[in-house]
Length: 112
Image 1: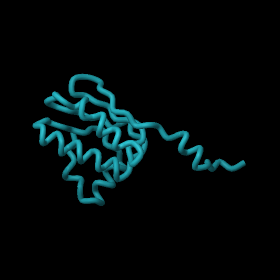
Image 2 (image 1 turned 45 degrees about the horizontal axis):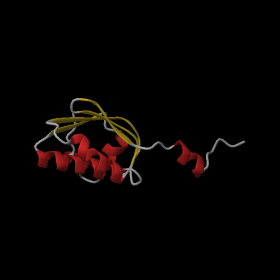
Image 3 (image 1 turned 180 degrees about the vertical axis):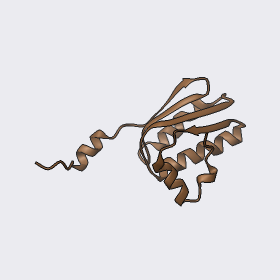
Image 4 (image 1 turned 90 degrees about the horizontal axis):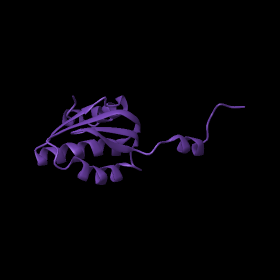
């Protein structure tokens, strides 16, 4: 029997993305961050980020990302600058860094 998996099996393995507060100004981003999840993550992050002076987003738990994930990170950066917040991303996945690099957007990302 073949080891290949069907698209249906791949979608079952995909995990929903989540942004979880782990401490004062500390957050963990996990799951698949892309077209299907970026909008909800942005909406939910507004209340979570409000009132924080410094934000640290650990991305070690991100499984997959795409250009929508990059757009989300850039939008968080824009919003943090507008609010006077110090934002840093840690453990940024290589996939997202590659997208940022080929898009000439890497210098926009506040990496820790």
